[in-house]
Structures are given as C-alpha cells and as structure tokens.
Length: 424
Image (cartoon, rainbow, N blue to C red):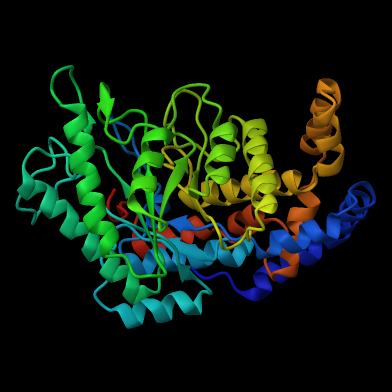
C-alpha cells in the first residue's frame, strides 16, 4: 500500500484553515514557538522492525492481518509511517530476524523511502533453528565458555551487517539471569558478561557506539544480570568511551524515578538512547504516553535541560526509538500514536521557561517550580507538532489519512489476512 503525495495534500487542504487558527493561538501563547517547530522538524524517532506486526501474550496472539512478511515489506511500512508523520526516518533492525542478503537492494529501498538505519539489535534471548548451543541458562553470562563464544560471535556478526547498511550502533539486551536463589553466582555471571562485552566492544568500528540495555525482570524473575541502570552504567564505564546505557521506559520496577536516572546518566556522559513505550504494571510495551503522559514530559524535561547544558545535539547525540508490542491495536496506528505522543512531550519540554525555573529552584520556591512545569505540560502544543509535519511535507492528521484510504485493508489484500511478521 502506497500513500501518494496527493492523498496527503488533499487531506491537509481540508484541515488547513482550522489548523492555522490553532497555530496562530499557540504562537501567541508560546514565546519560542518558531524555534520549537524547527526542532520538531529535525527530530526523528526510529521504528523497530519487530513493532510492525501484532504482538502477543503468553496466552495468545491475534493477528491484524497484512503484516510484513520480510524486511522489504517492513521497510515499506516504515516508509509509509514516515510519509504520514515526517518523523519516522530511521529503522532499527533485529538480527537474525532481519538478516539482509541483498544489502545494496535493501539500502536502495530504504533510501527511496527517505530512511536510514539506526541501531542494530542482537538476539541471544532465543534459540534459533540452526543454533548449535542453547541460551536456556543465559548467553554472555553462561557457565559454558562455548555458549558465551557463540553469543559473542553473533553480536560481531550483527556489527558486520550493520556496517554494510550504514548503521552506527549496536544495542545489546540480555535476558540473562536466574529464576531461583542459588542457581547463579552473581559475581561470576557479571564477570563473564563483562568479558564477553569487552570482546564485542573490540569489534566496534571507531565511529560506532554500543548500548547496554537493562531490565529489572523477565524472563528471569529472581535476578537479572543487567538488571538496572547502575549495572548497565558499570558495564559501560568499564568498557570505554564508545559504550553507553540504553533506557527502556518499561524496564524498571514500579514507580522508578526515570527522569532522575536520565539526568544522572547525562551528567556522567553515559546516556546512549531510549526505547519509548508506556506501562501500567511492568514492561507492558503500551503506546507511548497512553498511561503516564506527565512522566514522559518530565523525562523530556530532564533530557532537554541536560543535553542543552552539555551542548549536545538533540537529533544526533542520543538514539531515539520506539519499542512497543501491539496486542489489540493495528501496529501502524499504534506507532503513529506513539510518535505523536513523543513529539508532544518533546515540544512541551522545549517550551519550559528555563530561566524562570532555575531562578525558582535557586530560592527553593517549590510552588513556583511546580507551576512552571505544569504550565508547559498543560499547554496544548499539538498545533506546533502538526505544523512541523506540514513543513516536512507530511500529514496534518496522519491517523485520519491512514484510515481514510483504508491502508490496513489494502495491506491485507496484498499480503493476506493471516501473515506473521518476522520474529513474532
């Protein structure tokens, strides 16, 4: 299914008058509205290849139909998202699910859709059909050196594929841990993992980064070898200047102060990137901003403040990616909603009166501090986000266009009603 320029332009023309009214009002209310719009235009959020299909639970999976059956169709779907929102200009691949045979062809296809390749993701949390040794008891932490070597070689292969595609980063998430007390020697597991990460780190090109992703629980519920930001920070610090911590918003224990974690990692120059999603109880992988929009804003508030304090580029110096599982929604609609929520939270953070906030903090005016932040959060900046899309040649109302032209129904016609996205 292809959305043409005239589809977008036709829908935009119907909405333009009302949009301009809303935009004019916001511009009169927000002093730096024009600067915010330009920053929104420049901001891109990578779409993970595995998020293009329907997710599932331990009890079942209910396909939406028309899911991408190969990497070519995944790129086409991300190209469609980018056409609609102008902010999804990168794809994050997962190996071996997305192993590329025709590298030149895939790069050309991505370029046709205005896409680049973001961080590559390795997989040592599953056993593959042609795999010699099992990761049942861990990968890089495993007591058997042969299993650890297999996991190391896989990560190096992912780097090799990423180099060919033009990626500049490797994300390593490990499900390693233990289910029961006494099952694992914590120190040996940490040391084994560190040794493996060091070998992977040595294989990185000079201009690459490695992101060490942490998670407090699941699939192991007694211990996780990279269980929190402190452990990830330890690994990244011991590995070297090309190693960073990656924060997945759902990978924390309930009520964790993620915004404080972000601030401290930025201070230590070890924050590498984000996986955006939302949750009610755990790693629910829900639509970004659907449960805790204020927390998402507060996280961006710390990101903007911390990055600006260090002269960092908002577009290039951190990795921005969605990581969600769409169990009951259309995956593409869900991704459109997530990108919208992320852009709104980013715009709100950009609108915070930094000078006033710093002055209030300096005299412990707690009430004033709260008012400044909540003023930014409560201001409706959707018109600025829509204007950024308009200036990028995208749709004022992406979801409306998606539904108006029956995109999912057309995908089902092309691909079938019972397709399964690779890896799911």
